[in-house]
Image 1 (cartoon, rainbow, N blue to C red):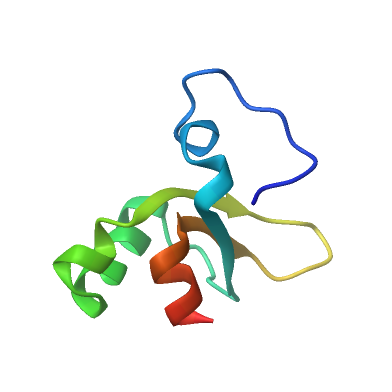
Image 2: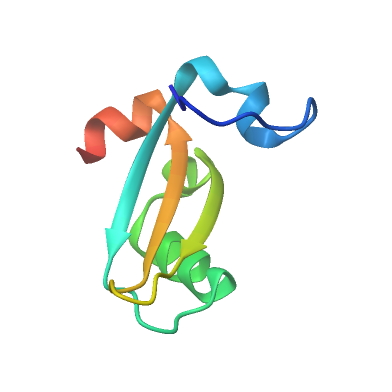
Length: 80
């Protein structure tokens, strides 16, 4: 479950909020979200890549960039 954030009513995370797992990919450098999704689709099966609900790039001045992804709980528990 995603806690502490409020999303728009029709946001993809809000639709599946109860059944999501948040995963983080660290040290992603300057990779774009489009390229990250493309690479994940190469690695994961078609069904597994379909379980990805949202991706978000996070970068801080003092930390390495990372990508946060929200996946359905079935895939998230398998990837932990």
